[in-house]
Length: 169
Image (cartoon, rainbow, N blue to C red; front, side):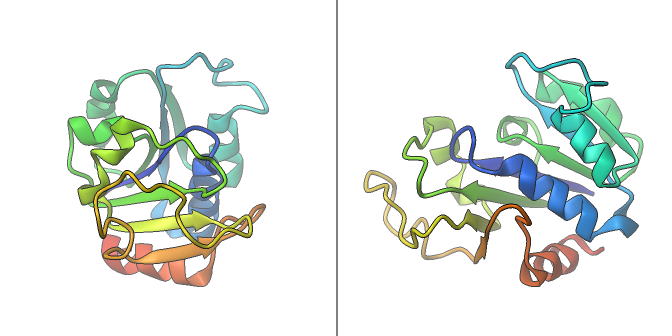
């Protein structure tokens, strides 16, 4: 099973959501993957996203720089949770959650082109309840399920149940 957690921009809470899902669904025995073309500290560093995934309970954690490198990981037959939008250029996940933070005004074009693929939005609450973006297709936000979460938990029982039911966990 492949669960993808993407976002509309950087610094929206994607890693927090992935960590929270790993913690909330330990029976899935997640293999967690961060896909990023940007430089990150070595995988073994204590404060890296991949280390956070392991600390949350992931069985394995990988940092890869291209979605194509995900192939061998998926072939293992394990439940994979991947933090990336770019993977959607190559694979259709079983479930795709897009993290939105209305206080982050940037909405990358690469994220906008994936709005039709979203199964649900996870909205990181910072006191703003209405999307600030006016140049996106009409109805993009209204027609999908929405779950409101807040740091540091980044999770609600409703998100867990949605993922469990949609992903067959």
